[in-house]
Image (cartoon, rainbow, N blue to C red; front, side, top):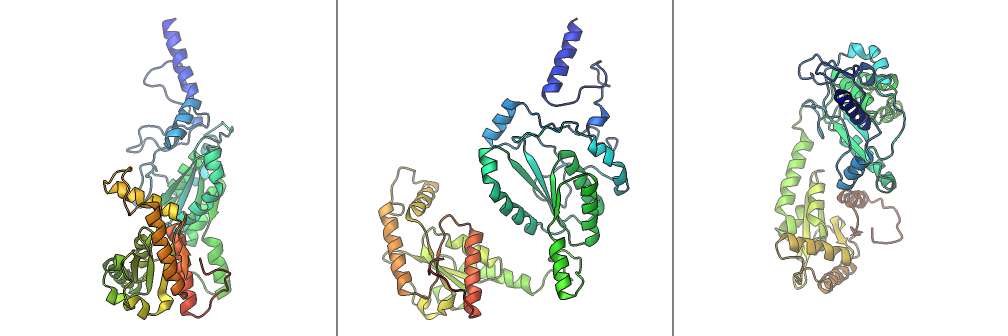
Length: 409
């Protein structure tokens, strides 16, 4: 009777965790889970002695709530990533591409539970034969449209980037894992054969997928009447090309000319940023430098005159930065705290009256120089501000400007 009670308790625990019961009720070391409840991962291969864990949408409610509250990612499989991936490394077991036709039944029968739980984390696999930057940023931009779902409805999303995937076998391993987990696959594969293989595999295993690069490449190919090279972006005969050295030179220049340093060299800069302290001049300068632009930034400080060279250079490359005073005060208080001044210690640097005074000074300077575009950086990401700067920079140098109602961007 005691042995029977132990068996019943074990089976109940397995059921609560969403795990399949053992084939036999004899709870010994030789008991194995039913093979129909999980995808076969060639467990006999080295390093894969332990069967992959089966994950059900029926997670324990208390565990689920605790995970959501703490921000910890919900129950997901763990992959021993390959050297060519970035982001969270997830175990991908060796898969022979020739087995693709035999895995359909395994994947389709891996989970008999069709009930959907909104609070269970969903996964998006981002696969690229390059850096994955294009797909990753596009996915993040799209996810921004679902903040209401991620926050209000508690349906977290985990994104995983697999970059540098140029081998068909590794691609199939990733897609197989996506099928097991129920993940979505978004890929940018310049090699058409790789892209077609990904499309066929996702269709075979009923995986929601999106080819981000293929339709665009086909459209441009048709428009130009040319055939695409099939090489991932940045793959050339020599990585040390002109653009590479231009970027290095721009970064070195920007670092040396940060925060008003070497004002006599403002003429050599491609872009000059002007604004009060903590408006994001330095990170914006660094971001632009990585795109190959030499950037200088000049701070506006009460009692300190702006360098004369600022008014003598080509005014088309000068840009002003403006920010909300309350937001700026919060940023400065956080900065003062990080310097060990304490949250309760008020300084002239972070006093609201001082902040407003500096911003009023900046407004007067910008009004006296109407050719400087003034960009509002409040609640704007660095990438967004950089996009505005580069658009205006290009328009001004090419003498083609779009009409605007306001001078504040």
